[in-house]
Image (tube, rainbow, N blue to C red; front, top):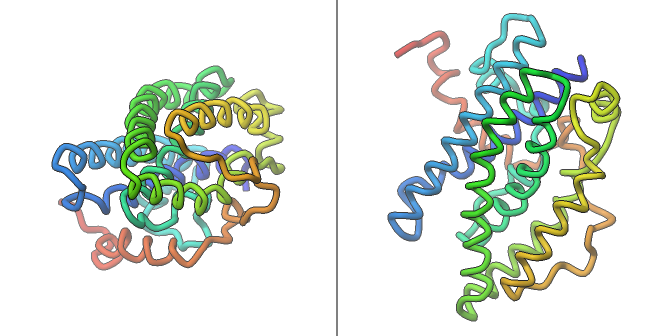
Length: 252
């Protein structure tokens, strides 16, 4: 597969899957204001996924648009990372997942704005503004929960300990990344990891949370970029794709 197409699918699928996960909170948020905030975050992510998958379809040149790529691929064809497909769990679990991804999104998208692919750089320029809002939102909640009550601190620390093992995949490098780096389209993920970790460490310290001892974890589940997903993605896609697959070609 064309390396640029593969790279765009990774970016788009991360945001499509996480956007769907966050949208599951709609109507279930802990407070009305947060319910609305999470819905807006989900819409931003799905909007970014739309632009990235549309560009992926253009690069592929096989007539597939963003809807075809979202609704008519099987789980093994998705290229999102494992972190974003993990279930919402409780509110603390959702916030930790969002915070870890949001920080990575900001440093990555900011670097992509300086890349040599004009179309991707333009999308990144729009998306990074939203990502900066997202990380302020999730970061504020990390502080409230971590430095809040004994119960909120316990739950957010438990979520951090559980989700930390998925973070190395965000910075893994393979042949696709090396080709994007060589072309000047994308940054070296390894170079971004230190920047990401510095921001994460600062927020965790202020939230009175303890960074997991293995930082960054040496051993962690991987393979999602090549289609090896957890069972959670299949369940998510079954729900997300059911309308399109039940009524193929329908418009409204």
